[in-house]
Amino acid sequence: MPFSQILVETEPPIGIIRLNRPKVLNALNFELLIELVEALEAFDRDDRVRATVLTGNDDAFSAGADIKELSEATPVDLIQRNQFALWDRLKKTAKPIIGAISGYALGGGCELAMNCDIIIASETAKFGQPEINIGIMPGAGGTQRLTRTIGKFRAMEMILTGQPITAREAEKHGLVNKIVPVESYFEEARKLAMQIAQKAPVATRLAKEAVLKAFDTPLEEGLQFERRNFYLLFSTQDTKEGMKAFNEKRPPQFKGR
Amino acid sequence: MSYETILVETKNQTTRITLNRPASLNSFNDKMGEEFYASLKAAEKDPDTRCLIITGAGRAFSAGEDVSGLKERYGGDTHPSLGDHLRKKYHPMILRIRNMEKPVIARINGIAAGSGASIALACDIRIASEDAGLKQAFIGVGLVPDSGSSYFLTRTLGPSRALELIMTGRTVGAKEAEALGLVNQTVPAAELDKVVNGVADRLASGPTKALGLSKRVVNQVGRLELPDALEYEAQNQDIAGRTRDHLEAVRAFLEKRQPKFSGT
Image 1 (cartoon, rainbow over the protein chains, first blue to last red):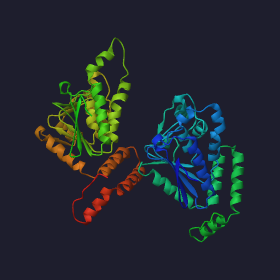
Image 2: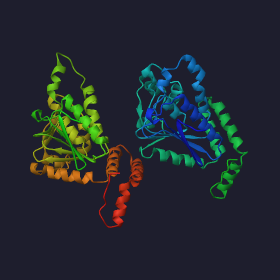
Image 3: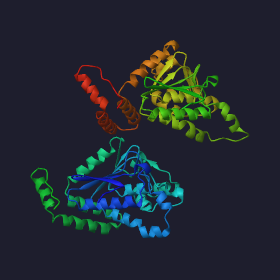
Image 4: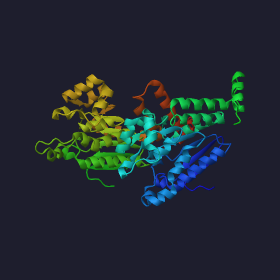
């Protein structure tokens, strides 16, 4: 399908999605979210893609929800749109997503960043949940994901004051994996996606699923879940190839089977 | 854009910002603070500006905060928040000078005191007239160094010499300042322009992106451990290696000629 709010590229073995509403700092309108979810689901089905880079531009990953769209909406509109169902689909993306984040990642933009599996940020990135400034609050996971990532006290301060934090602070508090100069963040994320795309695809998928499970389950149940995924991998050809290649001291040839 | 309290002139890809309230030794009233900051922002954005010179008109570089403006704020027993005043007026300009990825030269034509000294110290290179001096004027009015003075002095001189200057508030003459490493070069007043313009011309025709990245690296490495500093250099070298000017320099070397840098 043709996209109008995002740019989608396939550069096997990775996919690249760029949010593309530069005039409004990539504000997340309903249409963009639909396109994003559909693009990610298409990548999940596409055997040529093994990891995705999700990015915006140097000035903004995304400055958040489209306030104009939101302020014109009636409660009935909101119910009918059921926007959060899209976020639920987003969360179910099976293949790894590397966020390449520069500039503003605010509100829904910060929440979208936290839906990524790994975040490479530019030194100029700013993360924040400023919803409180317009009398609302995070609605797409901000209160939950931020709290689990940087802890109650820091999350509370960001969410209650609406004050954003710098890339350096985000790195210090574990909200991003790495910060690099603004000229390099995309390339760095691309390299990382390429590296991950070399691994056995079924293993990366089940490993991602198991890590995310840690957010939802008590330890004992999470460990059981991990074990089942671990056993499951032994039925794949790639696991046999990986161990064989290790013993034969050569790089493995993974087929995604 | 026209200003009331400063002069801005761009020539040979160098923008010269002159603090221009000579009757009050170029002290910073709020208007001059706003205009100076606006001119820094404009010069940073201007693609035709590849080097900046900051200087003062008349006999002073800048005497720092304009205390006459404080009068009305000290009515009765009130204590205005000096912290908020600094955050609003001086911090943005000091950070803008340090973070803008273009070389900034302080042409210290005369006394630089208080926050005036801070601005000079925030620049990348300082060239002073023999008649100039730097003064940590804060203690004289019962205050602590601000606008970055304690930061820059401590990093340049170490805590003991920094504290001597801060605690005595004495004026350090240009010659002594040069010996201490507080200014890069001291020259007779009559030669100040020749020397400053010479350095500016050289920088303005240099590989601007690499000059800016060098500043970025120097700004960061001070707070890093060696392995992280090495990594940070490598990241920025990647960027410099992709510039046109780098390729031009390599080509010029192979062709045994001087490179012509475009700044990109």
